[in-house]
Length: 403
Image (cartoon, rainbow, N blue to C red; front, top):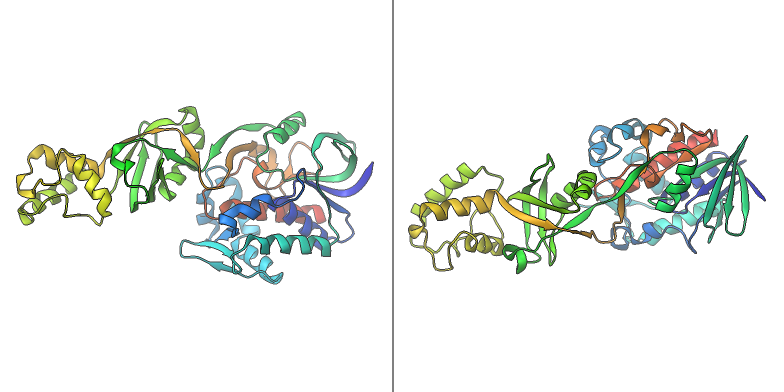
C-alpha cells in the first residue's frame, strides 16, 4: 500500500496544473499523479492542431462565462479568482510567453504544444510531483480519513483525492458508486452533415457572417459559416452544436436549420432585388453577385431560385424574385447526422454541478474529494475556453488542498 498526502487521478491539463500548484504552494505534501495511459497530456498535445490553444483573450468574467453552455452560472465566481490574465502570467513566469491571434485564441509563441508539455513536466519534476503511468484506477473506497485507490496491480492511500479524468464514461461510473450524480454525456462541438445540391459542389466556401436557427427550437447563433465536403462547419455551427448538445442528441441529429446568409429581413431583401431588377436590367443575375456573398454561393442561390445562367434581371418575375429573397434570407437545410470537429472531442455531461462547492471545487458529498476540468458537467465552445476552465478549477482546488 503506497501512502500519499494527495493523489490526482488523470494526467491531463487539469491534473498536471493542480499537482504543480499544490506542490508549489505546500512543498510538505507528497503529491502523485496516476495516469492510465503510457504518457500524459495527450489532449494538450493535439489541441489547436498541435499548437495548444491555451486560453482565449477575454478578460471580463461576465463575458467569458457566455462561452460555456454548461457551467456558465457556476464559473462566474471562480473566474473572479483565477482568470485569463492569471493563466497568461502563470505561463510567462515559467518561460512560456503566449500570443493572441486575430480571433482571440491564445497560443504559446513557439506555436508548439510541446512547449506546454515540457513546461508541465519540468515544473512537476522541480516540485517533486511523482507521476505514475499505466495506472488504470478500477476502484475508489472512502475511508474514515481519506481514500483507498485500487489500480490493476497496486493499492494507494491518500488524505486528499482530486479527480481530473476528463470525459471518461468508465470513471463517471466509479463516481456514481461514490454517490455522485452524473449528467448524461452527449457530444458537444460537432459539425453538421448535410446532403444538399446547393452546397454539394462548393466545399471551402466561407460566408463571413450568417444567422442560423434550428427549426422547432429556440437554438440560434451567428458568425462565420464554412461549407465542407460533408456539410457545414465554422463558429456559427459549432456554437449551435455546443449550446444545443442535449437538445440535438434527443433529435438523434436529424433536424432542419434555417440560414439567413445576408442578415436582412425577407421583405428588405425583396425590395433591394426589385431595385436591382431595374438597375441591372440587361445583365444576367448569375454573373452579378450581390450582398457581399462569395461568388460560388451566389451562383447556387440563383440556380435554386428557378433561374438559369442566362436569366437577365429584366426578365425576373415575381415568383423568381421571391424565391431568391427566400434563398438568401431563410434557406432551409436538412441536417442528417454529425461529424467530429477536428480533434476536439468535447463531451457535455459529467458530475452534477449542484454537488460541487465552487469556492473550492470540493465535493459536497465527500470531504477532501476535489474535481477539476471536464469530469464536471462543464463544457465550452471552441477557442481555448475548455482549457481555461481546466486551469481555473485546478488552481482553485490546489489552493484549498495546499492549505
